[in-house]
Length: 164
Image (cartoon, rainbow, N blue to C red; front, side):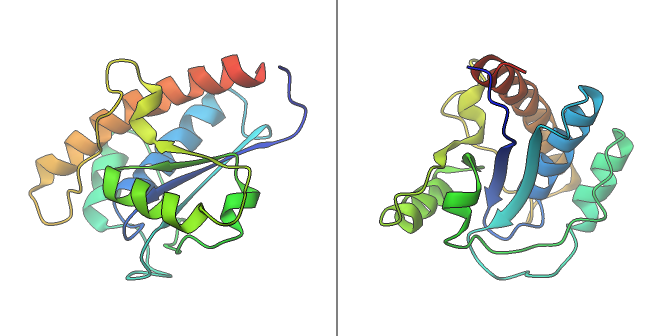
C-alpha cells in the first residue's frame, strides 16, 4: 500500500504532560530524521482534562533534552470525539487509557486504529509505558527508553504499512 495522504498518529496518556508528549516529541524527532514530517503527523492528548493548556512536565522535558529531544512547544489537550476521525492511529501508553479510548470511540465509527503504543514493538508487545509522575527521575528515563524503542518500531510499521 502506498498512501499518498498524510498519516496521523495521536499519542495518548492520562494527563498529556509526561508520557504522551514524550512519545510525541521522540516520534516527531524520528520523523524529522527520516524526512517524513510532511507524510506523517504526530500529536498527543490526554484522556482526562486535568492539565489542558499546560506544558509538558519539567522532568519529562529535562530528561528528553538530555537525549536531544525538544518538545517545549507542546501543550496538553484532552482527547475529543473528532480525534477518532482525524487520526489513523490512537496509541495509548497503558491499558487503562486504552480502555478509555475504546469506550470513547465505540459509538463513532471512526477510522482510527486504537492500540497500545508498545504493541508495534515485537519485544514489548503488551507492555505499558508506566506513569512516572509520582516517582523519581529514573522513571522518566525508563519512559524514554521504552518510548525510543516504541517509536522506532512504530516508524518501521508505518513504513511497511504505508509504503514510506
